[in-house]
Image (cartoon, rainbow, N blue to C red; front, side):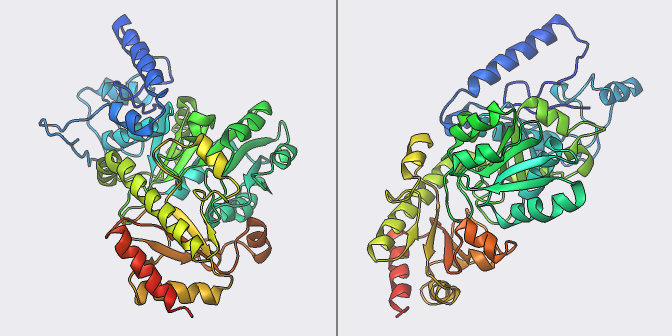
Length: 443
């Protein structure tokens, strides 16, 4: 069974032919038309607001949580029709929550609306979303071209696990060097061009439209990780085929949930849910419906949260630079991709909530973080991002530690690079005073 969640008034439409009345066919046509119109919306907040709102079973303003693992049918014949794909979630028929669950389906529809894609599927983690989509797109002997500046876990997946377990190889490139990207794509062999919209941790901004043009000219699928820039960037609206997320970060916002999402064409998501060859169906990175409910309640205010994350990051980056610190932030005019980001980002959402301070050595980086946490309470030493408190980590020895020294050097990750996910708790001036207090103790 291969059904797909859409952010339209009909929750999903099967990719398989099904029997039905002309009314059914008209309803599906209308839903597709509605979906296409909704996804032309530029502002992701507008798209989210236009998405179908699910009410509770008894009229509650919030959707009910469907916690069942399995679902009953009234007639024996119905189950056979469900397994053949004739009946599915688009008509409110569910089999088993590893296939589809109504609560998870609702979140998937919202994610598709936000990213402007035809369909989406939410998973148990960001890494499960990344690995599942790549395994669906690449077979044994396949080839990936990927940015050399990636989250350490993704880099390890491509560098070590895929070659050993799947016979899938990767060529790493400077994603800003378009000629290098084009040169490394082998037409007929390369299946995927993979990169992060804003890279972890060095904040390189990808030229999404141009990279998509290069890849598509050679028949290659573009997969973009947009974890660092939800609302700020919409890669699918810029030409990307697939967008993946670690929902654990900004979308969750509470550092209390592990989750991921694949957003892309209905045909791809359908194939990932195929009973015989679907990576999501067969590997089973299933999201808990209680988690899906929590996340669906947080998405409506993601735009407000991102604006504050980004506003404070810009203010702090500007002030830190004036103090003489080596700051990396795409919102600063001296950032190499500042003009690019400004040209492709959504207005009013800023330049991202992540900034970096390069202290030169790991010793100085650790000293600064220690003072910021234990002396002035500016933030916490912790990995991850998107929390309402500021989180700090020395990337080279933490989230990028899977890379060797040469790989880190190529990616521009210095030993003293401190990645800061800027929070919004307290007042801006209160937190800035705490930063200055810690910095004054560095000498």
